[in-house]
Image 1: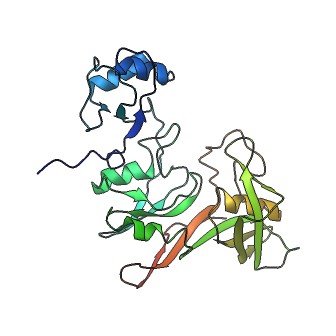
Image 2: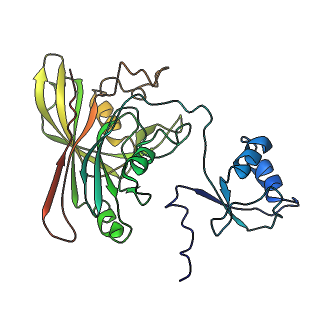
Image 3: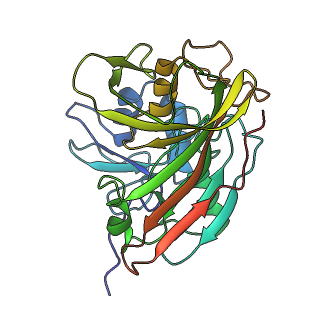
Length: 295
C-alpha cells in the first residue's frame, strides 16, 4: 500500500512555496526569503531534519532550488519563555478533547510561543497529532477550549460555531455599572485598530453582539455573565470597555499597559461553560471550567 501523503497540519509544520529567483539551492532561497532567521539557523534546522520536502522527507543542504517547490519546516523559537501555569484536561473521547486553559498560555503557536502553547502541550500529553482547536480564546483569557481529536468528524463539530449552535458563557470581573439596567445586549461594529492587535468600535452596521448580565455584586466591583452571540477578536473586552467598565487587569483596554505579562495581575475573564447538541448523537453536551475568578 502506498504511503499516505504528508500532511503538514498533522505534523504541526509550516509550508512555503519557494518564490521565483536565481538561487542555487533551497538553503540559499530560505536564507534570503526569511532574513530574520538567518542562514546558520536554516542550516542547523536542515542538519537536524527539521526542513522537509513535499513528501515529508528531510532535505539536504545542497538540494537544488526550483521555483514553486513546496517546503515544510518546523517553527522554532530560541530560548522560548516558559509559561509557569498548567492546563487541565477535563474530557477526552474519540472525537473531542476539552481543556481548561490557564491565563497567559496561548492556544496555538504564535509569535514568540511555539512549544509553550496549549495545542503543543496537549499533542505531547495525549500523543495525538490530529488535535485541532475548534475555536480560540485570547492568551490572557482562562477557561475552556474545545479540540477536535478526529479528522473524520472534525467538520461536523467545526460547523457548530459559524452556525451559532454552541452556547458559550463567560464570567468577568469589572467595575460596577449601577447606571445601566441589566441584563442588556450590546451590539457594535468592530474593526482592527492601532496597535494592530487591538480592536475598536466604529460607526456602521453591527457585526458583534454580547448579552451581559450581573451575577454578583461586591461593592465597587461586580461579577458579570457574558454570552457572546458572535465571536470577534477581543469582543467581550471591547464591549465591556464600551459599557464603561473595562475588565479588571486588561492589558489592552482601555489603554495598552507596559507589562502585559504581569503574572500577579491576570485578566479577570474566564470562558466558563460550553453547551451544544452533539451533531452525531443528538445528545446535549455540557462542559464547565474548574477555574474561578477571585475578587
